[in-house]
Length: 346
Image 1: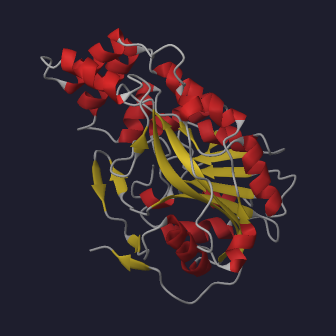
Image 2: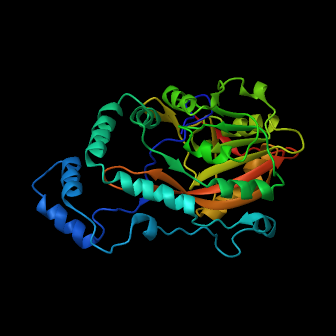
């Protein structure tokens, strides 16, 4: 995501390390091993995968990627304290999420485009961030929640007819589109990457400068989806958002990838954030509890609703999509807690 040194990252990025994926072609392990063995003489992984894609097809009657998709939207019993458990929303795999998965699967058949994108990514990555490369290639669409699910989260926080929205780190605006359907007034966005700002403008969204966006508030809702772990100063950003809310009724929607492993994109390089939040525990439930009881209160925020959802990204020539685990929080302003939750980077 965007972040860079300014503190507001970009949604369109490839995640490494903890991503899980489901392949569309070949559809079984046996098919894949057979196809790969036939092209074992091709040493380059990208070229070999191109040949596999071009000459394979799913068996008749096989399930599509959308039909095969499964996700655990719940949490472990008794893993959240009573107060958080009362606020937990159990999401589900709805029709619009299915359409996104079908789009991802449809892209797997565009073999030459996938090959072109892979070559361009290889050539451009030494000089540009993942966000910029995806923006140049018009790829890497993201998915978090549908508009109906966003509405349910807002309603649980007592927000039913919001007017103004600010989406921080809006990327190419695909997720912003789902949010915007619930609003009657102005839709604003911030984005660090210039290519993504251009794409947001093409969608009709007004991009605000990363410095001084607060002057355009107050906002009924501020969304900050998958930004904090790519932000240089996450706690400062949370406090900025709190100060820009409509008094007494404004809320913040936060999505955070867990496990929480922050870094900041700086062109093709990465660095530790200046404010490095230290999160104990290993499970998504441990991290949800810690953010709810320590990180957010330190920024003067309290949890009104929370949930779990898949953070999906359009795939490439190797996988139809990539999956990470998001915790979603709806936050309102409260008194500041008097403790520190981050360490200064060296």
